[in-house]
Length: 609
Ligand code: M6R
Figure 1: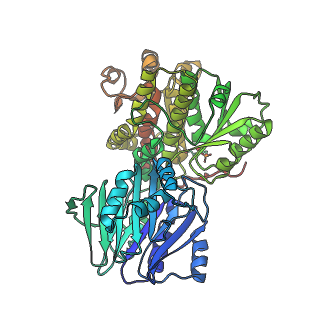
Figure 2: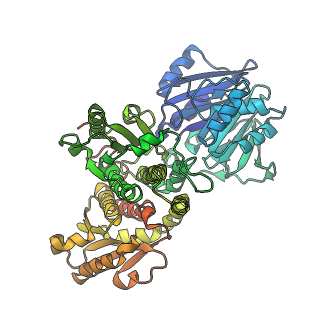
Figure 3: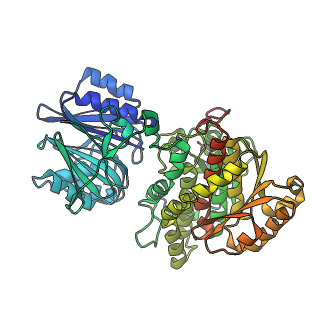
């Protein structure tokens, strides 16, 4: 996710801001920029690529002054480029803005501002904020900022610098994190604590819907309706490395906990307020394109392939067209039958996986339309596909994929609903039920995270085992595959996933006394069938941990332990039910003393065949 640093004080703003941005590099970025007040002007320097590129420009064109803002960008709207890098300025060059998040209604605002004569320099959603500040400026920076944020929808952290108000910066938070570092005669703003830890350990953590007026000699906080807020400083005791992980012991745990936010961001702007429609402006498909799709091939690797397996079931159920799912390293060498009307979908967190990219290129060479679901806007997959749906998970640092997977599922649900809606396959009430369920996923994900202590206890008891099985039917089967992969990948415990009904065709021979079996029971229409399979493994002595919805009293009678999930539609359950499985893998790996974020033999991005 984007990194933000702001400074008001007496030191060189360039040093503080660039130094702070460097501490945020772990978050990932594709471009960077800084704006400072110097000689009564707003001066901005930006560069695509690494911070070193920005530093090279600053060496040639140093920025004086001790008030300014900086940003590392993780592209969402518009490719990585100098122009799209933040800070963004208004037409008069009086306001500079850095922003983390998404302005949902930016297209409407942009059209309005263009009509009013504003000239845009970038393709970003953020630039509308700079022009809105200019448009609505009433002589007071605080009231203007409040009026601007009332006009923008979405999730954001925002910092505003104004030429004519050189003694203060304004910081606003809605959903995206922002902290204010408290100093003597100087104050700091940052999207994350490591950026300012060198200077202060006392911070205000802005809550959602708060605005801070940041001056050299102090900070005042307000609600977005202008009421003063009395905030208590938080004293940071973490060391610099722990601070990068937001206080979590590992990036993987941090990323597991980021899932409610990541799911929310991936939904943002894509579901109509009344839940009546999916809006995917990035596709811009004519009715003919949507109607012309006769079959879909989904191609991906690892966790992304598991997401594809869920996508197949969802697309087939909602759109009623045949969907094949392939592992990219197989697909690229197989004699694929993909006649006209085949949509090839590639799913890749990094957008750089060699096999997935090769499959994409082969599909394009055959003349197939390619739709990519990826987490990295400027990636090779994003650049080469015909259409792209971006998951807004933010950079994923741990090798084990967690938030990328759940947001891939969300993107697949959105696309399947969109395609069904465009082809007239769903009634209004069906669309509403689905979109209401999708909209409640972030909250459900929050609730599921509360199961962590129970899972940790289970992991403590079972971390010493050699084998384990994950079983499920229907959508619980790809979920089982993902649970088993997570466990293998970081705990190094052998884990096998089985379609529960398939066990008796061979694998049941391996189920003996005390073997842990994780039984996934979220697919209501298959409940009784899965229960019978659970009884089969119980009869062979397995220790069964069941996963079901809250309110299911029956499962507890047939298993040894139950983890309860908040109720949701079975179709969207994998996005929530995977979280306890991620936690199980995490705690088992910790218990075994493994390097959780960098498991042996594995790399985050597999760019070789
Ligand atoms: O970047 P991609 O999504 O293309 O990566 C695909 C796989 O390498 C990846 O999902 C891998 O399986 C994960 N590390 C599993 O946690």
